[in-house]
Length: 64
Ligand code: FES
Image (cartoon, rainbow, N blue to C red; front, side, top):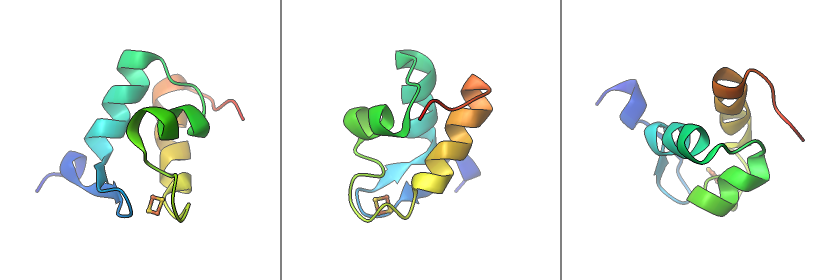
């Protein structure tokens, strides 16, 4: 399994790839928007740091 296929949100079984695609294709800017579109981060919140890092990597910054 490559790193891209890694599940970053185990609560909702959402992969890193899915989150990255959603951010870049839909132009998501916030952790909340990522949750709305992918369900990642909407349960325990344990993956929110990972989502933050992906937002930062793709957008260069994170809007809170
Ligand atoms: S691991 Fe993503 S909300 Fe729990």
